[in-house]
Amino acid sequence: MDETRSNNNVIYRCTLQVAGCPKYRRPVITGAVDERLKQIVPEVCAEKDAPIIELETMPDHVHLLVTCDPQYGIHRLVKAIKGRSSRLLRQELPSLRSRLPTLWTNSYFVATVGGATLEVVKQYVENQPNT
Image (cartoon, helix red, strand yellow):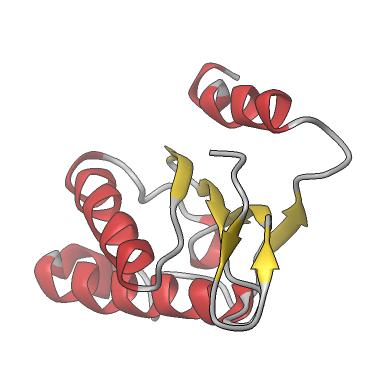
């Protein structure tokens, strides 16, 4: 998925690694939460025309390798993912409401995939459950 993309104004190849964790780094991304989160994130990314290269979850954090239009901005994409997933998961799974005031922390990690080849980073994200 290392292809050049474009919109009306920009031609880009902007692949980013994003990591985020639940509030208080609680290990809540398991079972039904994990399954539903893996449905919600691709839906949001598809709506925002941000192809997912890799998505891996751990009980206390999420890794996402995604291509994002630089004019839309990764901050908007992360906000959309966190907002929708928090709202839907807390509506559908009441146990989350009693354990957390919100699902996600305000912060997240983002890095461009440029210092390492895309294959190296993709392999790293794929191997997250094994570490």
